[in-house]
Length: 139
Image (cartoon, rainbow, N blue to C red; front, side, top):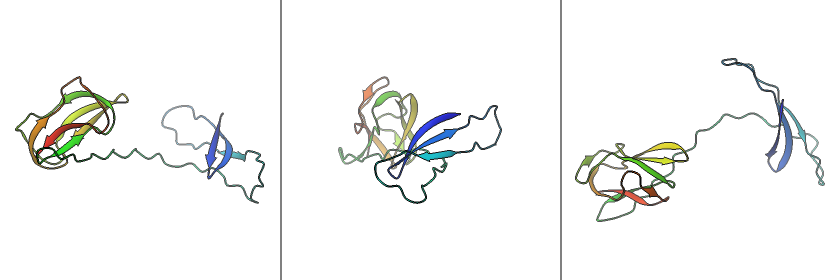
C-alpha cells in the first residue's frame, strides 16, 4: 500500500492505494480516504476522493505573428530544434509538419496552421528557442 495526501475542494485527504502486481490485470484497488483534522468544522458527510481518468495535455496554442504579410509558427514552449522540415519558397498545406521541437524530453511536431508558401525559416537544427519565438513564417 502506498499512502498519498490529496487536496479536493480545499479539503485534505489521506488516500491509500494498493499496487497491483503483474501486467494486464484489470482488478481495481480499493480507495480509502480519511479527512485531515482541521481547525474548522467539517460537514456531516466528508467527500471521498474518486478516481478520475487521465486526460492528455492539450496542445499549446500557436500564436500568429505577422511578418511580411504572413503568419508565424511559434514555439509553444522552450526547447531545441531537432529538425526543420521545410525550406524558403516551399508550398505547405495546413497541418503539414514544419518543425520538430524537443521540449521536456519529448519530440513535438509543429504543424503549419494554414496553407501557403514558406516566406522565412528563422531557426536551424540544434538551435535552442524560447516559448513564443517565431520559427517559420508562412505567407
